[in-house]
Image 1 (cartoon, one colour):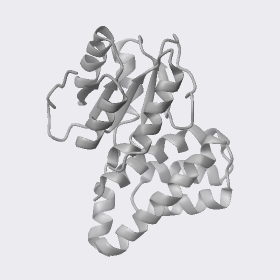
Image 2 (spheres, one colour; image 1 turned 90 degrees about the vertical axis):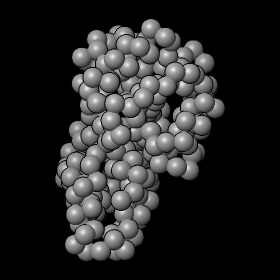
Image 3 (tube, helix red, strand yellow; image 1 turned 120 degrees about the horizontal axis):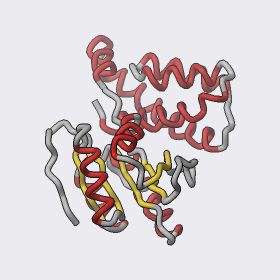
Image 4 (cartoon, one colour; image 1 turned 135 degrees about the vertical axis):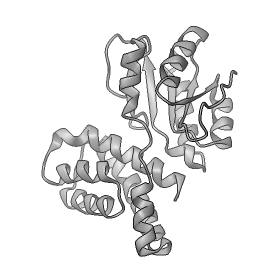
Length: 222
């Protein structure tokens, strides 16, 4: 395992899992230049240990022939108790073009050999969302009421992820989630869920992305 010190204490951490040395170096260079801190793990136990030690903002998992092993790693990460369990998981595939995620637990799939500038652009959309709007709201209304609302939102968004994976939309619930996300300062998720509540099925992917990022922000806490 190779660990690279964060260039900034505030830099979000991207954990590379299962990448060979050449690919890992290429992804490190691409991500470090855009403000990510990089960690590396070789297998599931090491990945989970590192994810327990410090919050992971993004997990990059190389596709491998042992599909069960990759699925087991994803399951293990989602079963963790700390904030890393909610981190976006991006599968790095051998495909030459961007593909659909392999499962509802994987948030995106992109080519492992894509150019560095393209990789950086693709992963920019998975950068953690700011909690500053939510903190400002908590400063006005008080941390107690906001904490309860955030906890309830997290539970409902977890359930909504399953609904999105099945491409099944309850427009009434979508409208309620849009309202809650907007009230608590999660503007991207608010916009995506509002579109779904209005029947915009093309917003499914955006709702998945922003819901994952909102869950990760909620797990980080105020």
